[in-house]
Length: 146
Image (tube, rainbow, N blue to C red):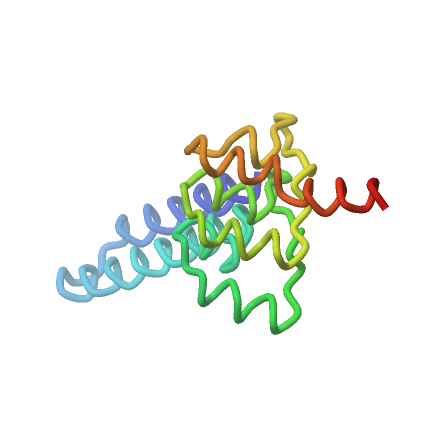
């Protein structure tokens, strides 16, 4: 809802400014400034709605940013507006090294998004899906044997 409001308000401002009777050169430069501001605001709103910089890093497979964020105190199990985790986003995009790292750092493989999907269920590659499903199973089996 926030995104729609931001987009509507931005378009309204853009319309009003372009409708004004300013000199053509001032109108153009002002129009360019407003368009740039609208684009930045829209990108910021979309980024925030989809979880912010850590989720962007997970979507893009940017392991270094993920590592820095986790070391700086970011929650490995934080969720975005769709209840997705970084593990889900990295699995969905096929970033196996990010998936491995997040699981090692304590990512909860059982969390579900608003569509009741887990990271293993939305993984783009079977290898990633199987790895997520089996992660931690050996340790659990060893504990049961003892």
